[in-house]
Length: 224
Image 1 (cartoon, one colour):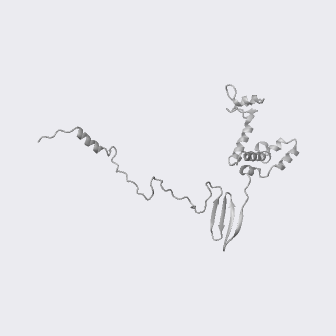
Image 2: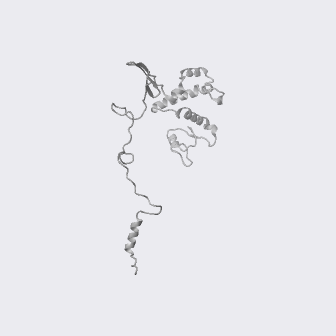
Image 3: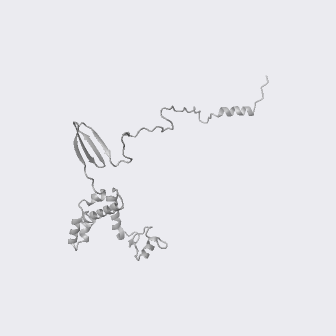
């Protein structure tokens, strides 16, 4: 098992848990030399390509879906994606150079839209219905995650099938109502007026404090 020097594979003291697991399974681990990209550079380049061209935009339905669709991307990578480093050939052209009949058989089995399937999964079936309600012609069709209802009188309504939340029931509002008490009080209740704010450094207790000081330290009465 050839690995790089990542902390999950290698430690500078003792043995990593991964190395111990390999030993228990009878597997010999080979650790690549640091700063030597010729060893693992091609594999690491593949992981970057897989991320940028597939995983970054893909949304998987589960582990099985991810396995199948990543496998489709590997098909595309090996049999359909040309590589500049091998003069515009695909990896299978080099790998099966001595056995072209095997390469031809495998290429015939690779889906022509393997990249699209890997990125987006199975395409949704299109929906289109047309008819009339009274004298008004209507049409129902799909656009991605939406179902669109149009009429020849200019009517257009959209239903987003991927929208979060529960399905609307009869009698429910078509839009969210306004909040009732955002400020902590009903909107019809008048706001409580705040007391006047004095000048900087002043306090509403200053007058009471002055009166208290006069009571505690009475001044001698002036003699006439």
